[in-house]
Image (cartoon, rainbow, N blue to C red):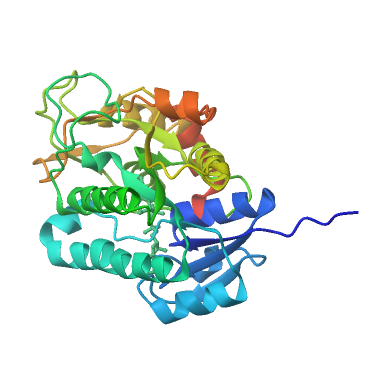
Length: 329
Ligand SMILES: NC(=O)c1ccc[n+]([C@@H]2O[C@H](COP(=O)([O-])OP(=O)(O)OC[C@H]3O[C@@H](n4cnc5c(N)ncnc54)[C@H](O)[C@@H]3O)[C@@H](O)[C@H]2O)c1
């Protein structure tokens, strides 16, 4: 009987919120996850025991060569990044250095090793401020309004250039607002993202800060497209399989969202229903770098990757964080 070797996959940032979910999903799908993380915001306890963990920087070319020597991986899922929009406005250089500078070093190491296949975690923040309320397709012009968004857009362009030079075959996945939790994964939640912030405020009986209620939207607050982290992981598995099978070196970009917008107040009201708690709101001024409306048209991912987000109803997302991740709030 033929025994299929387990395919190792390098996951940068695999100790973070999304990475630690994805590591478990990859392992369950039969891959060997190789987690490379410098633990700047991730936690070692979030990395499952069956994954190989390498503490270090994504820009450490010697370490990447050593990992490849021991586990010759055919592809990389590149999640490692600094991810807070507001912080990027305060500290742009830090964001360009980490997200762009260190990714360049990673890409050089991959080129040296002859590894061409990369799934890149991009973001809806590449789109910037829209003129309409129509969900973004991948062809909408990029116009980021924060250094974080710029860093993602720069990397997408670099990957396209490398693709034209036939050095890299990349799939850029533009995530919209990722939230949710898995019943048994026990991974960390972001205290900087809206849904964990609301649930944390409920748990500690504090008011919720809402930044801006004078946007040109139905209730004056920003509109976002929320996607369950497990739906996002499904899309990564499909994209990885697509990438591993694809021989033609195309560069592809997919939006990962649900086509459904929820305002900040919609999410607060849903959290009140899920938790049976009345929430106090404190309004403050708008934050720089927060676009009014970010909603995905993800037709391309649905048709080309055959992806369907099953769990991304806001009630379900909030329920899962409240039920399965309360210790991290
Ligand atoms: N969470 C969201 O809603 C969202 C939305 C759009 C895009 N994204 C992207 O998804 C990816 C993962 O985001 P997340 O929410 O899991 O964030 P996270 O902060 O939980 O994870 C990022 C991980 O990268 C690691 N890291 C950062 N710099 C590193 C470096 N130089 N070398 C090695 N490791 C490093 C951190 O320690 C952390 O574990 C990021 O690229 C982010 O930009 C996230």
